[in-house]
Image (tube, rainbow, N blue to C red; front, side, top):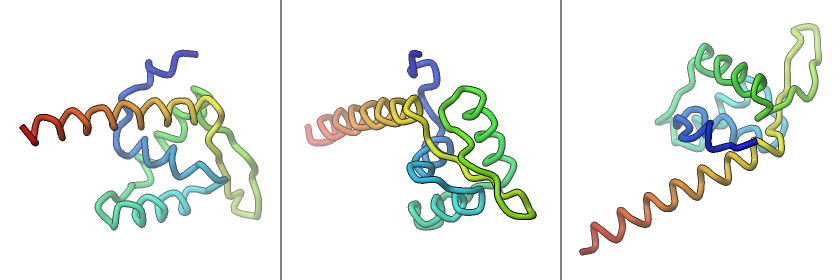
Length: 105
């Protein structure tokens, strides 16, 4: 599948996918994103679960397990999701490289 159809990712989507590099649940994702962005990006539950639903539907993440009486769901990035992350990192790096060239002229 061509991951370019999912690109560009929003900043929130990028960090959610990155947070699922290891199995993680909703609250863990929210905390991961807050920590990695020094509190600049705070995910609302609606945003988080909307992105999770889209990512599941497109097989970018998978449901790893459901546990406990509250049925806490744990998700993880799939191989396709990692391919998309790598594509996004390359795309962003190219943008930064071009900006650095222009700003140093």
